[in-house]
Length: 264
Image (cartoon, rainbow, N blue to C red):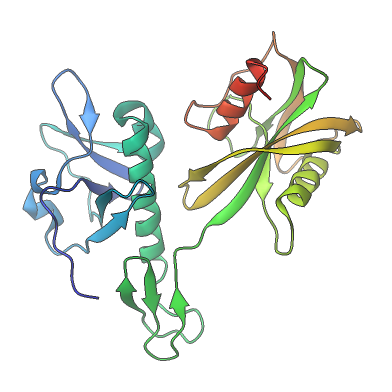
């Protein structure tokens, strides 16, 4: 694959680790910079990735070797950037981050250990054995469990960064359907059985490279018994007395808000 040069007119998603470089605008707003706005000495010698978005638009992605600070610029964590740059740019940056993560973790062939070569924007090939590598997505389910019309199951996972409560979630296992994963995760984490499983929506989740598939389900039977190594708390909550909710960027929040509006 020929080396790609920075396009000065296309947005540039430049990351140092998981921190996104943003251009500060008058009035305190931030945005993704265009390629031509970023100082050349920040990007010299860096591999440029062309990232095709589901909308058909194109952005560029670069991994920086240090966190740059200068007047008119800021770096923000990808999650934090959602509140600063809006949904469209957040989604663009999210896909760019996933491409950079894939690039950093696919330097060598997993079959024979030979250094890989990039052939397309989303494909590398081993020159020795021909093995092809594409960006991999880890699929997970998340489910809003209802008990009657006015209660839902909410949990606090031990890996949550904060005091908010969320919904039961977990990764899909090999040979498992999405609905089977919903039943298994709810039972493993809470000891409950569910029924009436229905698809809600899905969401790319670039932390680092996931796809969240949302469902609703109804409580069928059982008493809550939390999986201690996964959850620190969990209970059914009435719609008038919900705990702290997840961030608005998450499909968990959208599921809860849809339930509060009695849409699901």
